[in-house]
Length: 569
Image 1 (cartoon, helix red, strand yellow):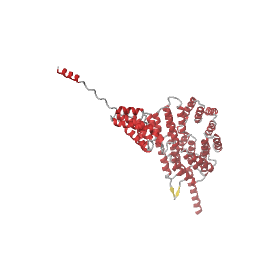
Image 2: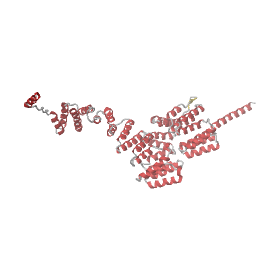
Image 3: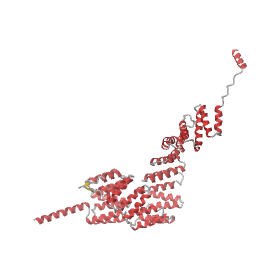
Image 4: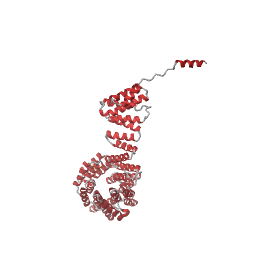
C-alpha cells in the first residue's frame, strides 16, 4: 500500500508539472529554443530569431511565449502588421495570455492608442498576479520602444519588480530596459547608471556597453561613445550592433575604415534587405554617385513597392551630390511618401529643408522641415546644430522675424548662453523691426548678464530710440545717459569715441528740440568737442544755440503819432 501511495504521489506531481508547462506554453526543449531565439534578437539577427520562434510554434502551437517573442522579432524587423495579426489571432482563442496582451498593447501604442494600450498592460499585470517579471519587462519594453510610449510608466513598473523570499527578482534585463527608459527621458546620467548595474550583474553583457555608447552618441560625444562601442566588441566580437555603429560613424569620415567595420558586421549578421541597402550606401560613400543611383534603381525595380524606402533617399542624396536638385527633390519627395512615420530620422528633414531652400517660394516649408528635425532629434547638440542652420537660412533670405525666433529657441535651450548668443538674438529682432523685444533683450537680458560690455548699453539705447523716432516720448534719454555713464566709468576708451559722439549728439538734439533746454543741449555738444575738437556739426550748433536772439524792431514815433491821430479821426 505504501509503495502504491508513493507511485500515486509521483504521478500527481508529474501531472502538475505537465499542467504548468502547458500553461506557459513550453517544455524544457522549447524553452531552449526560445532562449536561442532571444539570443538572436540580442544580436539583432531578426531573420534567424523569426525562424527559431516559428519552428517553436510549429512544434507547439500553444506556446504563448514563442508567440510573444515572434511578434517582437517581427516588430524589430519592421513588420508590425504581421505582429498585430499574430497577437490578435492568439488573443481570439486565449484572451487571458498576459505576455500576448502586453505585445498587443505595444502594437496599440505604435498606432497611437495609449489609453487602449494602458488597459491591456494593466490587465496583463492583474492576470499575472503582479509577480511575473517577464510580463513587467514586456510592458516596460513596449513603452520604451514605441514612440508614444510612457517612459515614466515603464520606470514605475520596473521598480515594482517584486522581491520574493528575500530575493531580488530584478535581472540584468530589468536594468537594460530601465536604462533605455531613462535614455528616452533624456536623462543620460541615470541611463548610464542603470546600464552599468546590468554590466556589474553580467560582465559578458556587451549590450550594456553598447547602450552606454548610445547615450553618449545622443550627446554627440565621440570621446566617450567610440570607446564604449569598442569595449562592446572587446566583450563580444560577435555583437553586430556595435560594429554597425562604428561603420556608420566612419561612413562619412573614412570610407576605408567604414568598409572594414561593415565587412565585420556582415560576417556576424543576417543577410537582409537592410544589409543590401547598406552595401549600396557604401558605394555612395565612395563618391561613385552614378553607380549608387544605378544600383539603388535596380533594387527598386526588382522589389517594386516592397523595396526599402531608403533607396529613394539614397538616389536623392546622389543626385544632390551631382548638383541635380530637380531629380534630388523628386526622389526625396517619393521617399517621404513611402517611408513609415516611425522610421524618419532628424537628418531626413534637414536634408529636405536644404533641398527645398534651393527652390524659391519654399521658405516657410523649409523652416517647417527644420522644426520637424528639431522635434525628432533627442540630443541637445543635434538640436542646436539644426536650430543654427535654420537661423542662418532665415537670415540669408532676409526673413529676420524667423531668424529671431530660431535664435530665441537657441537661447532658451543653451545652458550657458554667450554674449554673442544674446547679441545675435536681440539684433535679429532689431532687424525685423521688433524694437520693443530688442529693447527688452538688450536692456533686461544682455546688460544684467554682461554688465562690463558696452554692446548691451548701446543697443538698449538704439532700440529705445527706434521706438520713439520723434523723440517726443523721451524713451531713449535714460538709456543714452546710462551708455555715457558706462563709457566714462570705463575710461572713455578710444574705441568708444564714435559711440559717445553719437550718444551726446542724440541727447543734444533731444534737449534742443523737444525739452527746449538750450543749456543742456550746449553741454552735450561741448562734450562732443572734448572727444573731437574739430567736429563741425557740434561747433555749428553751439554757435546757433548760444547766439543772442535779435531784438524785436521798435515802431517809429511819427508812425505811432499818425496812427494815434488817425484813430481819433
